[in-house]
Image (cartoon, rainbow, N blue to C red):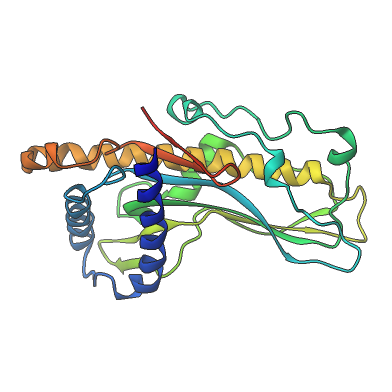
Length: 271
């Protein structure tokens, strides 16, 4: 586990470097270029070292207060109120609510009025297809595909104003658009939800609403991780046939999900 944690730190640092440098990514001139880029980047990933080489890395949601008013409640300890999520949920595609277990009614009903909050998760894979559109083929959107599995964003108290919902939020993606199609690629995805507790609307937005949104973002991230796993397995099948030497070089988590619980700071590698 210590080794996995060290690799997780490297994953975080790599993520930061990727965000800084992805504007220097590949220049794509066609959909064929895009497909070749996906394959080439995956081959490089599979030739990497460490337990997490070739894994799909996902992090549970964090709640942050972006702006608060005088007298508004502090959300300290919000993460500690949530249960950790067994990786079995991901593998089985079961999205069972866990967030509200063991929380008192008083705390559930506590208002979050006056707070502008974000609930954000993250996923990393060598190169994720965020969006693809080609003539004669159905449009494919990673965020919308995840919503199909996790369900729509829940409707809560009227005082909870959804400022923005970005299922496949990313930074400086590699993109191509031409007559033969359109595609968006990135190593990192940051699904994000912005919620504001409005003063002038009743019923007020409460802690229970916020935790329910957090639970939903967990489901969405699980669904997205599973989709990325399925897409990665398809690519790996052809790569391993062409490059059989890679078979013994990749980490034990190649093509599997590594789930990191940001509340408990524990990792759950898929078996």
